Image (cartoon, rainbow, N blue to C red; front, side):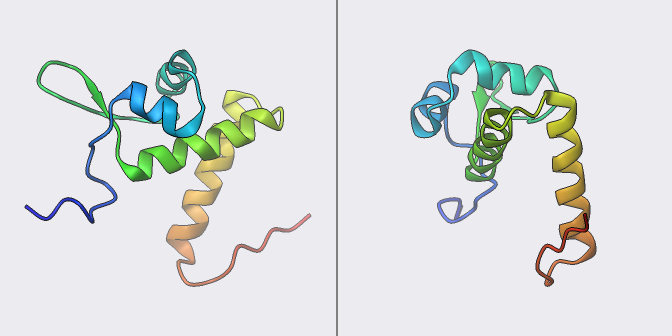
Length: 96
């Protein structure tokens, strides 16, 4: 199985992700409770995070540091996802 180059493969525990990102474990759990991230689960219910999840956590933390609340972050992420799915090869253009 060639998972080492698969950015969506869940391989990190929550404590490792916390160390990697500087985001406290309880905050990562809040992100999940708020529906901002969805980590994979092992058969024993342990959370596992992929490289894509780690990037998402860093984006969420950055938005939170800027004072955006969870519903606002959810909307920003939705718009970003919509934009990239509609225009995958175009730069992000925002209107005022």
